[in-house]
Image (cartoon, rainbow, N blue to C red; front, side, top):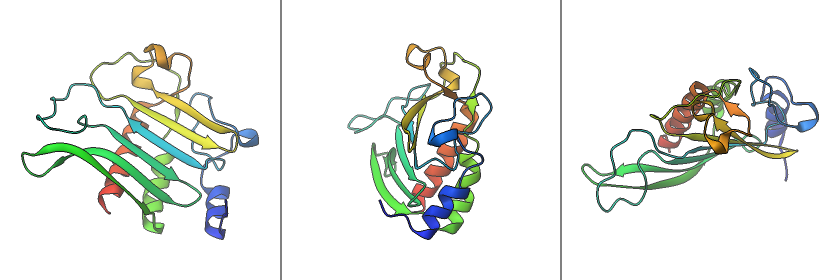
Length: 177
């Protein structure tokens, strides 16, 4: 992979702090967005208290997938949204480059992706997963709101509020397309 000057600079100063040796952050209270991060993927798995989609819908209300390449400063998405007034829900997919203004808005939000030391047991909001890729590989973090679920018990969790802020920011950036 070819990294330009801006990409290299974003790798060097993009995060706050570094996981030693390009690894992953798993310590409570620390941001997972470090200078070692190559890519961040956020998946809203849906769920929580939402109405069922209208008949003919092609996806589940609220489901979303966002991929942010820190090196290339790009965003790719696939999220479920209402198509037309009173219509059905269908996937909206796309990708775009993030300009300096976009990155200035996104980077502080990414720093809010902090490891949660609590294992909540909620049931009324969509579940979100976060995958952080560094040179050491990819690590999946669970949603602290659902820490009690079996699939979240043996993986680090992210503070729910940080996940929500980042998802809202990514959604806004995808809508700018």
